[in-house]
Length: 289
Ligand SMILES: [Fe+2]
Image 1 (cartoon, helix red, strand yellow):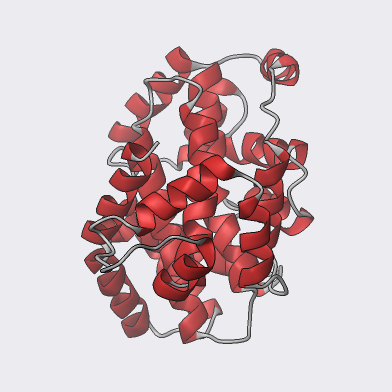
Image 2: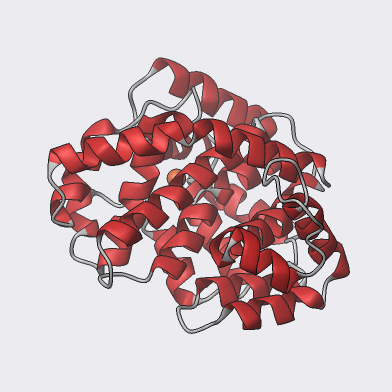
């Protein structure tokens, strides 16, 4: 096992990625329940590269609109604020990570998991209206595992070992990471989110994204929602194939939110059906770079 202090030291000298300011603003607006579609499009308009990509994606055969989607306002009207918000966050964060090469983690799979968890949050938001901030949970779900990519970037050999152990054992991923590297993707993810000045709730959602169930339930419902979304994504085919899904967690968190096991099952089924669409959308984001 690597010594924790030396890992921390190396990470603290690691060149942290400053997130371009426009992306921090996009994430902030996307995570806030008071920001409107107009606020987000105003921010996006400051970044021509991102706006142009969103428009290219909105004009793709995937959405199949006749006529040209030639402005972000029109994109919001046609494909909806939620999708534009998703595209804005996914393209900006995706770009940031894909600019830094690593070949340990299948990045497409990584994003699929994030997308699955974010979609699960949307579904939970419709099922349980008004009890949690869908926007904050959405960002939390999308970004909760970014520590995995950062660990793979900084410690490729060790992270390969983590994957090897994870594929053969039912241990929690965070436990394996701590065993091999001395710290886990939760700590790193929260640390980067803080360095990026993301809203405190998002930092905390990442920080608690692998708490034990009894710890999570002591906190606001948002924490349980992000945990449930993570595990729903895992059991609906959106996970890494080397991570054993913590299936039992879904029902535990579901109960906490007042959802019966049958309802969790319905959510899992609905989410599984979104896989194909999500893969196509992911490909678009990757290809439209
Ligand atoms: Fe995680």
